Image (cartoon, rainbow over all chains, first blue to last red; front, side):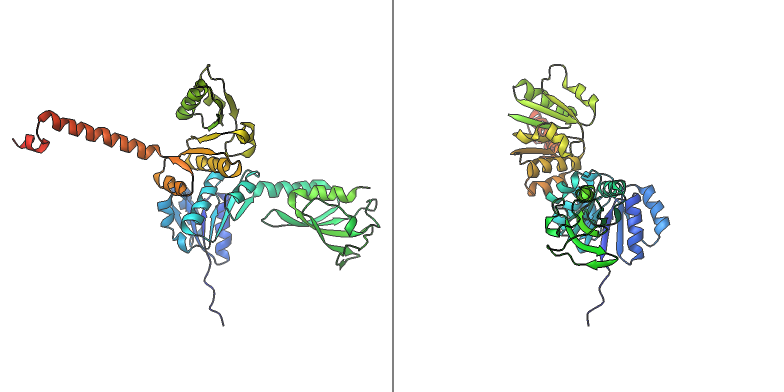
Amino acid sequence: MSEPAEAPYVIIVGGGKVGFHLAKHLIERDYEITLVEKDAARAEWIEHQLGTVSIMVGDGDEMAFLATTGIERASVVIGATGDDEDNLIVCQLAKVKFHVPRTIARVSNPHNVAVFKALGVDAPVSATELLMGLIEAELGSEMVRGVAVKASGTCLVDLALPALSGYVGKRIADITIPKGGIIVCIVRAGKPVVPAPETVVEAGDELVVYSQLLDIAAVGEALSKS
Amino acid sequence: MKVIIVGCGRVGARLARQLDAEGHTVAVVDQLVSAFDRLGREFGGAMVVGNCVDEAVLRRAGIEGADCFVSVTSGDNRNLMAAQIAQRIFKVKRVITRLYDPIRESVYREMGLETFCPTTLGADLIREYFLDGVNRGRDASGVDGTAARAS
C-alpha cells in the first residue's frame, strides 16, 4: 500500500484574470495554492472571492520575496502575469535558484513560445496561439468536426475526406500532410480502423489527425486537393 | 563593430551617439518613436520601433550580424529576456545587460550574462566620495578627527 499522496503545492505568480481563475480551479481540485499578486487592493479582492487561498502580496520576480513563499517545496511554479518577460524571469529563478521541477509560463506573444522553451521554461502556453489555431480551424471548412487541444500546441482533429479529394482510393502511405502530422485513426461508417501504410482510404472516411494546431488549416487543404 | 542597443533612454541614447560618432554601426530599438528624439540630428545609425523581446523586431535591427548587444531598457526583466535572446538564440558574442536589482544581477551573472548594476555602482561611488570627504576633513585638522573635537 502506498501512502496517500500529498496535495501538490503550486505557486501562481500574477493575480489577473488568468491567475485568479486558475487558482480557483486548482483549489477546487484540492491543490495547495499560493497566489502572488503585486497589487495589494487586487490581492484583497481575490482573498474575498476565494477565502481559503493563500495570497501573498509581493513581487514574484524578487528573489528574497520568492524565498518566503516556500518555493523550495513547490512542485509547480506558474508565471501568469500579462508580461512575457516577467513570466520568463519567474520561471527561470524558480528553476535555477529553487530547483522547482516544473515551470509553466503564460505567453502573450505567440513568437515567444519557442524562445521560452530555448530559455528553459518547461511549458510555455500561448492563449493567443491556441485561439488562432481554433479560429482558423473553424474558418477552414465543414470538414473539421472536432478539435482537442493540448497545452503543447498540438491537437487531435477529426477531418472528413471530401469525395472529390485526390486521395480517395489512395493508400495512407501516399498521403502527404504537413510535417509532424500523423493520421492516427480512420473512422469508417462510424467504426474505427487502425491505419496501416497500405490501408486504402475511401470517400466519406474521417481521418483523425494529430498535428500542430497551427497546421490544421494546411492539413485540411492537403486532404481536399483534387 | 556592429552594435545593437535596446532602450533609447538617457544611457542608451548617449551610448548610441558616442559609438556612432566613433564610426561603429549602431542600431537602437525602442517601443516609443519619441524616445529617438534623444539621439539628436547627428545620429547616423538605425532606429527600430518595436518590442525588444520580439525576435522579429531584433532581426529587423540586424541582430544576426551583430558583434555586441546592449540591454538598457528601464525594466530589469525586459533587459534579461532581451539579453538572453541575443546570447542564447542569436549567439551574439558580447552581450551587456543593465540590472537595477543587485540580487537578480548576481543570479544572472552566475548564469553567464555580462551584467552591471547602477544601484551598487552608484552606492559605492557615493560612499567613496563620502569617505573621501571625511578623510580630507581629518587631513585638514592635522590630527585624527576625534582627537581634534576632544581638544
